[in-house]
Amino acid sequence: PLDHTVKMMENKVFPAFPSATRFCVASSNQTGFLCDDRATCIKASQVCDGASNCRNSEDEQEQLCGDLPHSLPGYLVFHCSNPRYWVYANQRCNGMNDCGDCSDEMGTAACPLCGSGWWSCSPVLYEYCSCIPRRLCRDSIQHCLDWSDEYVCTP
Ligand SMILES: [Ca+2]
Ligand SMILES: [Ca+2]
Image (cartoon, rainbow, N blue to C red; front, side, top):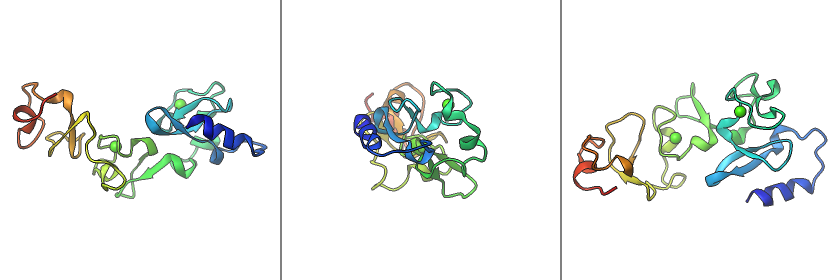
């Protein structure tokens, strides 16, 4: 998918290569940000995280990070149900409760229900929403309200 994105973009001329045209698909199908080299696609959540991930630090430039999340191009941002909160686009449907109210994990059309590495239940822990990682099954610690992680689930 990355090659395709890059090709599409090279067909056009972008004088300043604005951030709005940097959409790309990073590893594991995550929404990404294309560096100036037009080959490196970093995860959305690596933009404005204080660490330089593109060679020339274009992922940390003031123009992009000066007024979060408004200074970010819309494709990098997911707005939570609570209007005070936002998360990066690649934190949507990743199984973790990044919004705090699970609004980033809701909607079965947008977020497929618990993938193969996950067990479906009502989690005890705040950090999960409707599934827990299967590695937490049968570890002698309750992670599901109904204890199904300890009695039904297989890792
Ligand atoms: Ca960064
Ligand atoms: Ca999430």
